[in-house]
Length: 143
Length: 440
Ligand SMILES: [Zn+2]
Image (cartoon, rainbow over all chains, first blue to last red; front, top):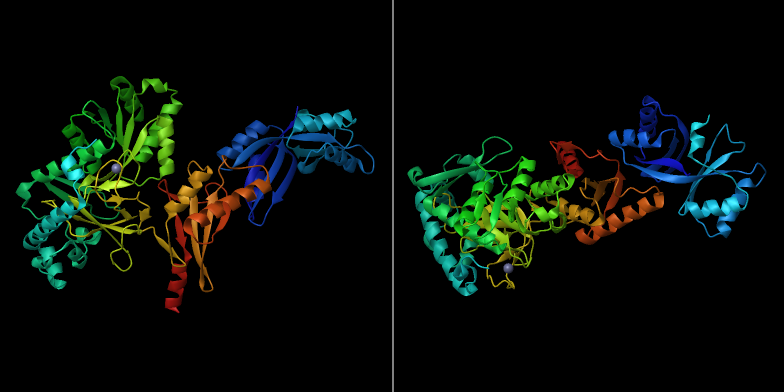
């Protein structure tokens, strides 16, 4: 149901991001979305790929520190303030968003945003009850 | 449970008299029989008769590992080779090994102190002991072996390695005592887990672990995995092998069998004796050894001595678990720092096998310590905030332990160089600056 995400620990120095993307390309992975959160010393690279379980193994075997997490793929209502509306709904329900980033899908009618919250179940419930569409992991396979 | 109650529980005053008697005899013996000692004593202006009290020990010259190398192979032996019934040798990482010899009496002494060591761990005649220390030139295997036979245990001299066979024997024979290095014990525990062996088929009760220093945390991990009590035993081949000191079941440090091995703690820089409780380099004089006696041998191990009594009733002076080696010791802003202290902190925080590096540098007049820690999957979190919290926790704990401020840097796995499986723990850039300034 949820979208599976790969997180990788990276030191904040040149060439590390390139090393990951090259490795994944060499193994035929298609990176569908990506975000980086960093400090002056280190960063966390978050990726959505077509085969997360295999990507996890490939990265791990190459010596990276990796974890697999789940995020919520939320379809943005196609109107000004669409994102703000979604955030308001979660805020009112007392759900804290840890981070979010965009995901481009050719199949979904609207833009998608990937959300990391502590309780995915609860957040999905609040949003669907208010007419917001939640997408599953299958979106990463559709081009 | 004592092996030799008279010696182990002797009133301290009486033991001091015995120590002085033995020291005086020893000094005379080495002066007469070992040219090296005669030369260094003369150089220091000391005659055997000058040793009138235990305090005079502080005036005697030290013996170092270099002295052992220089006199290779038999130059420090105090008895003719025909009286030597055994030699052992420790592998030198560079060049020749150091050779030690034993008379028949020395082998008896060794068996006695190892029997005391095993008794400290609660080992009795009806125990089945599996000795997974290496046999051969290394003192570990045969040292424990003779002590266990003296007690009358059933000895399984399996030596180190072939872990699956070790586990098979352990189940089939009903082994109750395991003797090996702590790292091998941990390996054995992990293989046991991998093989999914029912713990009820293993009768192990206690482990006597030595030959490398280990932290309490690592001990707890082994204890939990194997469901045993882990006892730290201490020794070094130069002194006799295993059997110099041992923990008892009260966990109060290691009892040094000081009727045979007279310990001191010195400041490794100045060579001055330090009072009980203070950390420094352990120095040992072998009071009773015949073939290979040593006067004030600098072990390069860092520990502290404690004279308070132990609930077990033994009156031997105790030493803390080894905190490090003088070779590893760093002095940062005047404070002694050991890599092992950082390791303990990381183990506490949840790194099973912590990989870390201490980087010391000088900025202006001040030394700076940076601790690099590899982020393992076990502690990795998907959120920056949680990693920053981890970083701060590590920093706070290390600062609390070392008493100086540090900067912690999280790094990727395999960032820290491993040479032959052993990680390099320290980079001291201050030396580079010194070198630079000298050449200028
Ligand atoms: Zn005790």
